[in-house]
Image 1: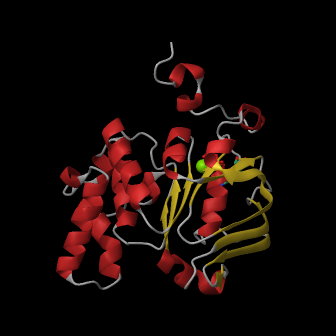
Image 2: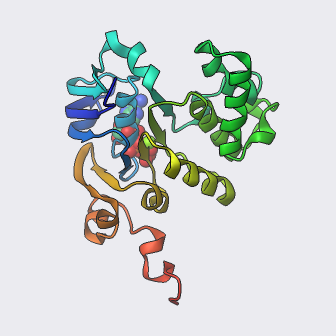
Length: 250
Ligand SMILES: Nc1ncnc2c1ncn2[C@@H]1O[C@H](COP(=O)(O)OP(=O)(O)OP(=O)(O)O)[C@@H](O)[C@H]1O
Ligand SMILES: [Mg+2]
């Protein structure tokens, strides 16, 4: 996996009940890009990420991660490079304590104990969750669970980070820490989010989805300032771009 290119080519997908979620989605993301994935509820953002993580396989079209087409046979290889934070943290946390959850991936990679310990401490620290290490995940608040789920993935040092609503229910301090980390992360980041201000802060490029189709792909600063485009996609200007959101106004 030298290039870590992530791409979809004319991907179509319908869920088991026949609901068409992706209707011919194509894009190519190069190594090191930070890309926002935005769209109204039900637009298909999570479905796109689930395909890139190999959790879902397309009904039509192609998904590639690095040198690998994502197929049943390449899932182990794909998942070695991709770190995926699910929209629902409860899909990610299953050990008796947060610390054990964060250590789970690195231990599975057979890293030495001191390296695992270091990674757990680093990952929890990056999302402001060091104090949660010995707590049972199911007893945490929503934001604490979100931070713990993020840490489980950061501890794996993935080459490609796929984040589904990473800032949802984080308090401002934890959100700020997360943004700082995402800005400093050198590898590919694909971030589905309704937090358009986070997308503005982190992603130079944005994909806009609407009803399972890609309706725009371009520089974040341009697309997220385009009120008409956003309205057509069921979105609004980021707070910072709204007249009353600018410093010195109103
Ligand atoms: N398990 C499922 N079974 C059937 N339909 C589903 C399932 N999961 C999602 N869908 C449908 O697929 C479409 C895309 O859903 P998806 O979860 O990808 O949207 P999203 O853009 O992530 O939305 P949100 O902003 O609410 O997270 C929606 O119409 C949704 O109702
Ligand atoms: Mg979603």
